[in-house]
Amino acid sequence: MSNGHGEDLSGAHLGQALVRLGGHAVGFPLVGHGEAYKQLGIPTQPVTTHSFPTHGMGYQSLGGVLQELRNGQTIDGLRRSITAAQIARHHDAVVAVGDVVPVVVAHLSRRTAFCYLMAYSSYYEGRLTLPWPCAQSLRSERFLHVFSRDRLTTADLSTRLGRRVEFLGNPFLDAVGVSATPLPSLSHPRVGLLPGSRLPEALNNLALMLAMLLQLPQHPDRGPLGLAAALVKDIKLDHLAAVAAQQGWRLQRHRPRCPGAAALELVHGDLGVELYWGRFADVLHGSQLLVAMAGTATELAVGLEKPILQMPGTGPQFTPQFAEAQRRLLGPAVCCGAGPPGSVANARDTARLLMVLLRDGDVPTICLRTAHERIGRYGGSQAMAQTILGSLN
Image (cartoon, rainbow, N blue to C red; front, side, top):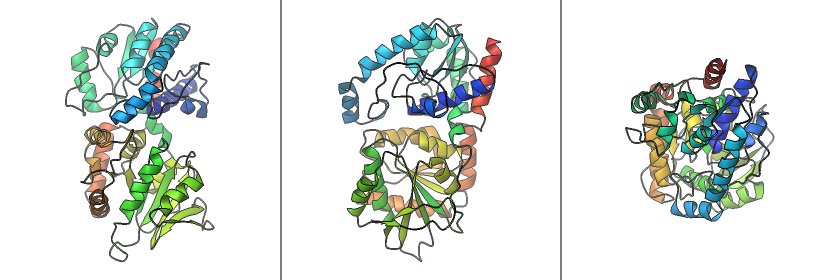
């Protein structure tokens, strides 16, 4: 049971690992349609689902919260939680992935339970205070294992819960383990753009990134630079072209020079942004630095030991508050320019930081240490699945 976009992704990879080891897994997304489960071949419970604008109400704008409440997230979530608890009673065990909601639902199911507490980290506040009744549920003997998302939280929670908490890595990292179709190799750096996945916010974020790129120094002071945007399939070509044209970028088609190259790019002077739809992992692996306005996508990039340059937006999801919380969570691998969101000052300072990060020789070491401490190594899904099935057996 999972309740969010990143949580569904982790739940799906964990379910896939359970199946590989001989188990049978069924996904129950408490929010959204559970596309991650379907893409990995994990069946989901046949329950009516709804998709909400932000996939959650934490660290977003007031307008985003009101929009979610107006759309019925609270009522719908309560209904689906009750259904999930009832359905779980027909299975041998239930795995809660996310925050207090799936934890409580798992507890109420009265089944043997496991928890991957993905949504909480001690890096946010120094010491983690779990919302009621999350801690009370996790102290129950029904929960055989509790998995944390980083090393600091593991130590903190073990003390506060009075039980063993384990850090075995993060299953969502399996989503970008390999690059299926690598981007063409370059002799100079490539910067990836991650504008997010929720519309219309992703298009607005991309517009801010394009404005920032126009603040970069001119070639040859800048040196050669590759640019690649990772876009979700919901971003349509005509909408993208209209947004880019407002800043003087033009959409250009070209014949791919080699396998894996983009067929479309946005051009402005000597700058060219290659456009890749549905090739998120390829852009992550092929970039030396990521400009990000996203949640789970940024965590995946940090897990791949990539430096991150944030650009806070106007929301509803990627607000300055969300960005600041993300920096506390992910540490020194994430930097952010000064100035109000969408301002010329922020665009200029972000462009300045971009050039600094590309030339700083200490960045790779910082990113390697951050990845191991805060995301973990590959294999989290396999390790958790082995622990779960071993306990059941």
